[in-house]
Length: 86
Image (tube, rainbow, N blue to C red; front, side, top):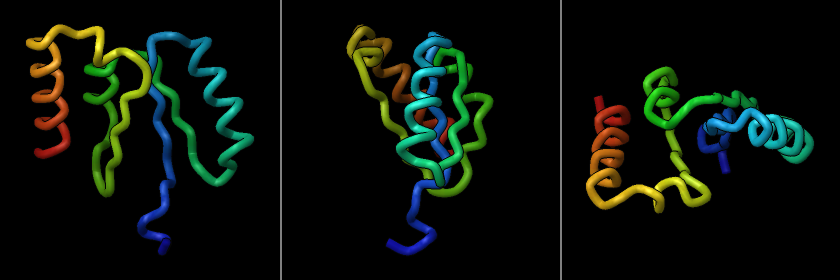
């Protein structure tokens, strides 16, 4: 894999500061060369305040998306699309 395709920054987003602290501590040990920038927020606010330039890989772990009803899921996906395709 060439340098352009390597992950350089990981931005975990969660409303739980305890979860984010855990992620920060564990990931620093596992991935010392990746910058970790935790954001305590909901997805909407966090994504509005993150620069989405360059190569982007979005991953939603856990059950957050599954907790949304069909209409909310569609609204969320539309939001993601609008913010990642200016």
